Image (cartoon, rainbow over all chains, first blue to last red; front, side, top):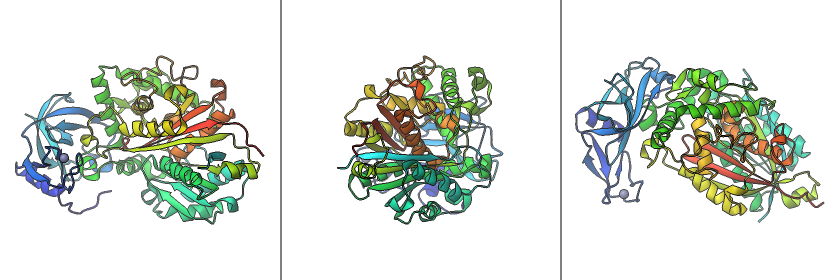
Length: 127
Length: 392
Ligand SMILES: [Zn+2]
């Protein structure tokens, strides 16, 4: 089940990543978070500013998904990973590797299309 | 503050009930619980009801009044939704209502109808427990999320993924005599290791099945139980709940579940117990790794040591702390909204000595129920104690 609608904040970030200008939200204490947010989830500060997303991140954990949901039916098997960019972490699909990457594997972030429905998806490729 | 007694329990069989409506499943469990308590629907002053995805599964929202009606109850009826912890949060609210004196007799229950959705439909339905934008749209499935937690755990402790298989074997073995269980068949470690992977490192036998089912329990105040001469030897002595970031990516650690630690601390403090006092536990093993994280959060084992507890015989029937004697979610099944309530029903019987696995316990007095939502962004913990018979 997918609902066609724009999600301000989230879709703006994906637009920016596509343009090579990814960002995150930072509070004065230096905590990172992802849009849309009005409050730093770490300290409660409402003084959030856009900061450039670091160019590369490291895989925290990865899994090869063999049983997908309907939106990824034709993408499976695919690798999902959580990647640490320092102030924030992102979840996405790893592409451009032969094997499931282990912790510490360095990737960059992009936005590509799913094979199943052509939906935008956050992707990671080796750096 | 009123003491909260468990006066009756009811459950449908967990498994495939093709074509059976949620209202019919819940009616069976609710009537079963009322009959066990020897109470009438008119005695019930509130219904607290857990359900996760009735809208997706059978196009039915606003289930609480409908399902109250199905049991014959005419009383305030409220639904609780906290993904797989929907039942646990309903139990907690019911306990608080009785304690506060707002109600003397409540029915707390839960239902989920899932199998008619098919595997892809149920996989999709379960996924909405995660962050739609930053997890689901990124391809994370429910098993995929637990696979990331498992992968991080194994990496952090340099541990062997094969040890997870012993948890599946234990829980299947426990369920063999549970006539309500979805699977009543034993498996071997080899079966588990050779099964197809769902999301590496987790395979088919690391995952709970997709089940239909309902469960209900009657909670009353101690005075109500005495006035009505009820056979209610088990008391809820502690309730706790914790919350964590919804998305895994936002958590400090992928292999700790602080929401469950918080819930356990609160519940243990209320009951005046420690982990050492616990005789048995029903924990939320939606995946084998989830049992590991649960038993560590509950303080049964140090972080990193829960993985081998089943393999080493610590959580098996003859172990120091038997876990999931019912078969757990893994083998008993996991009709999501019913699970947290079913844990209470199973523990009540274990403590009362009327459970099919009661022979595993020697005069038990304290049982723990641990129910988790999503990747444990919500956790509830309840402490149940067998107390002296009600003074008539
Ligand atoms: Zn902050």
